[in-house]
Length: 346
Ligand SMILES: *Cc1c(COP(=O)(O)O)cnc(C)c1O
Image (tube, rainbow, N blue to C red; front, side):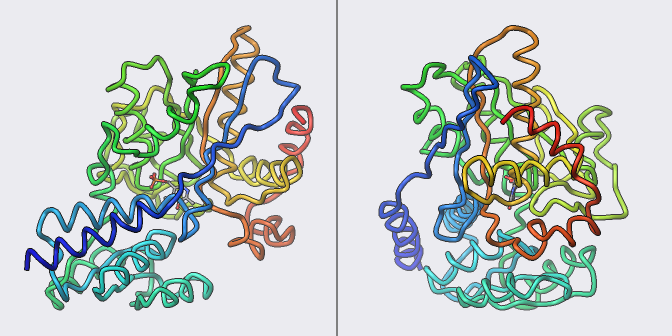
């Protein structure tokens, strides 16, 4: 059994050894003199999003804790990027993978999971995903990965080339090498936990700002301390914002939170596409809008420095939604006011 586990871990480590780091892109914004803005491009991982890091961490964590053995079926509650990335690693080590997801999940997502050999188990609504995943794991004597519980602890926050260490290393030759602020949104909260802990561990002065979309409880919970808050509706910004306070969300390492209107997030990804020719997913819009807010505050305070945020995934996944003006008008509303305010920056 140990031989199988060693082999599985070695396969994941070898895959990592073959991979390149993601690029840190500098945005050119002459309207923000003295302020340098950077985007860590997580869309270039083999499975297309920052969830590639999470899935690798969750598999290594479960393997090293003796939770996955030869033939253990891996189960996850996810209709999104996590299931795609986990299916990739499950296939790599040769174990079955089942994603529990709402039956309304977009066909393209289902196809991506199946492309990596994963199966999809459908439930009627998102609220049933967690319990069904727990039941399925019991029935099949499988293992429930449970991203919303384990994301914060599966990644080594001290370093080991986690996303925080990578960012600070890539910034080392920049004019403002230690960022004034790092901005990130929260889905599981795992990435912001790693960033906040790493910044503290290294003693950096960098502020961690977490941005939250409209339909999410993180912002209110951060301010009230109430971890029992819930919402009856899900977030409209895919990948971020939650209707309940997830266990992985770590408010104590966050310096400040900013609430970002959904229409601002969408206006920002369109603005970014014009500026750079790169389409990003909607959570990148939330991140970048927050980063621009911080930049404006720094300008007003006559401060100089750098701000780093993340491109979490590519917009090519969302051409018929967030990049479709009819869909945006119907689902999100009018984004013109935010477009006008962005036009003043570039
Ligand atoms: C998961 C996700 C996030 C948030 O990252 P967490 O580490 O889970 O908080 C942001 N954007 C996208 C597209 C995601 O899939």
